[in-house]
Length: 236
Image (cartoon, rainbow, N blue to C red; front, side, top):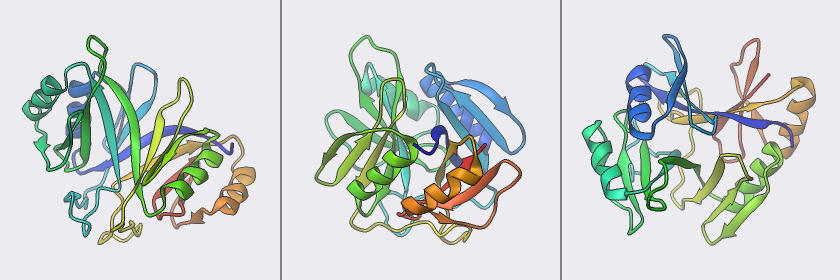
């Protein structure tokens, strides 16, 4: 374990609108807000954040030329009612889905899934899913980075997680098109913030796992790309 998953961060040109959408849809509570950043909390204390991106280029799922890169899965006690509520709040239904999940786009264009949970259960953020060309390899990378065991590995997918932690799913995509941050023509859509105690100790370990250091950063964060090209931050 190099660090712990601290935040899942979505880019948006309207962070307050995006945050309000998910707060209303899934019962998330606002923890922090300024003109460039909003943090919401789930009931479990997991952080879903929105980062202002004025030049945001929305994904056009399932078009591989403008890929989703990440998506969130939510469990609802009544999937049909959850889909109806999402559309009332401004979501758009997308192609795809199945008997137990429906694919939609939020008002900023990010795909997400409304999934069937246990009847009578609470609405819950089930996982964050990451597109990649090799699910097993990326699951191994994040398992080592975050100290979470691989909980599932199968054809075209993988997952890591632990009790009390947000699960991370890896979805293998044959036509995978990585972000090329900070190139606005190939933008990131999401990123993960990973909290570490000692950046000088953590950075070489992350690089040894296969991360690549990217330009940018600040007094309390540095920017990297995972082996599939997704940016992530080490924060302290």
